Amino acid sequence: MKPAPFAYKKARSLDEAIALLGEHKDARLLAGGQSLIATLNMRLSAPTLLIDINGIGGLDRIEEKNGAIEIGALVRHAQAERSDMIAKRVPLIARAMPHIGHAAIRNRGTLGGSIAFADPAAELPACLMALDGEVEASGPRGKRTIKSQDFFTGLFETALGPQEMLTAIRIPLATADTRVGFAELARRHGDYAIVGLAASARSDGKGLKDLRLSFFGAGDTPSRARKAEIVLESGDVDGAVAQLDLDPHDDVQATAAVKKHLAGVLLRRVAKQLMEPRA
Image (cartoon, rainbow, N blue to C red):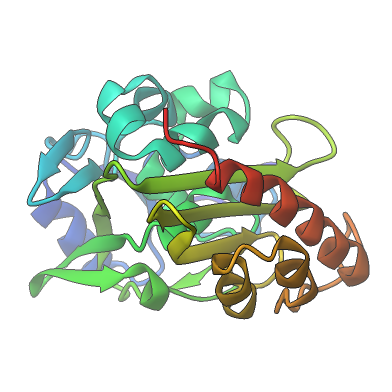
């Protein structure tokens, strides 16, 4: 299938892109295009204007600022996958990267695009939630910061306004006591996960503190399992599995009951990762 007709404009600045969003209410932004092109071809999306933001400078940087790693919206998955800074300072992102699509997809796809698209089965929105990260949104009134727990509002829906675009994500730096875990189950490597889990915590030498379990593929948005977090902090893995407070839906990949069972399997695997000493 071919996309519906649309106009194309390559924005050369952030201000130009924001202005175009204001002028064309049904415009869409093009970054890596790995999700957008598919939805265009299937006519699930039919904008009258496609705004290419790849010409905007400064959005492809990975920097350490004020106790956080700032990742520009146009940073490619492959760039993040190769980044020593991310491997050392944001190890959960480094663990997740090889699970995202295939090499060709990671060469073009962007972290900002993945977060803004808000696919509930995608890895990076769940990682952002697990790491208590935040999003920088830019619009006609300037920039604002949106915490991850407030950003994902529904199925493929976010807190971004109609004339706003995601310009960066910020994630607190990992420290010596940081522990992370990641696992997913998919029919084939590179497919969207049937269900997955991204997790982070602090180790105090006796147990886990500030635990965040963020499941993907288990709801309309990344899903925190808060009851299971409390139980797992005490070291009771079986109890945490029994207290998994998730409400997945049936879909083409699995029933809700199967997803709930697989979530428990992943929780046991990730719990082992969280309890390992940091390398």
